[in-house]
Image 1 (tube, helix red, strand yellow):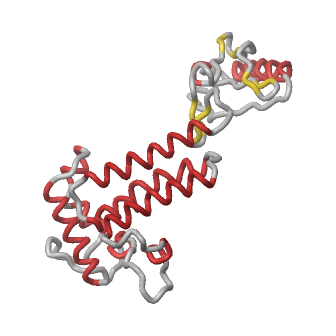
Image 2 (image 1 turned 135 degrees about the vertical axis):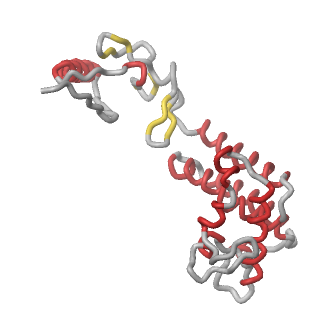
Image 3 (image 1 turned 120 degrees about the vertical axis):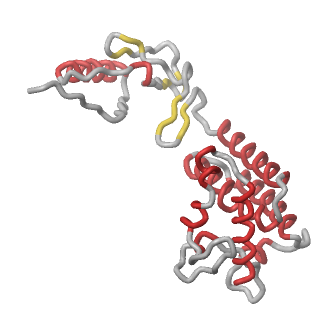
Length: 238
């Protein structure tokens, strides 16, 4: 039989005692040697906890190599960062900083107010949702970030500061703001026509005009004109 290469996905070992963990690692080391598979201790991490605190004195080995702890090298697993802090206080501060820097960056750009709201909805909000879903962040922090977002949203839309949040996000009221996803409108077969596109509007038409920007990772003047025309026609159609 010819030699074959095989790859194993990540494995997580959780034991209540130190001796059990060492026996489990020794057993896995024997099985991996029998399967002709090698461990990569440098890419692995250990998290020994005693009395709700990380124990730096406990060291685990596999394949005759030491496994670094999360205190020495942090690791990311399933979208979550693990370090020496067992709480999510540090991640909460990073999330607040990300929201503040993102709002200021959008505010400094030279786009129109409605396009700034578009950037907020499809660029900044998805970045904030991931840490809010993964980490345990208190509701007061979320409410403070939401108030900051609403403040910039009112400024970009040109509405008075005293306008309540219900008037901005409500969809069943008699008077509501025309906030809707442009992607959902563009991908329909009956979408609006654009002066820069001879055929029916679609996402592939927009991207076809931005080959240089997509390949080089930057925006061009032609792409900006297409998106401005797109946003103007959609707002008029509504």
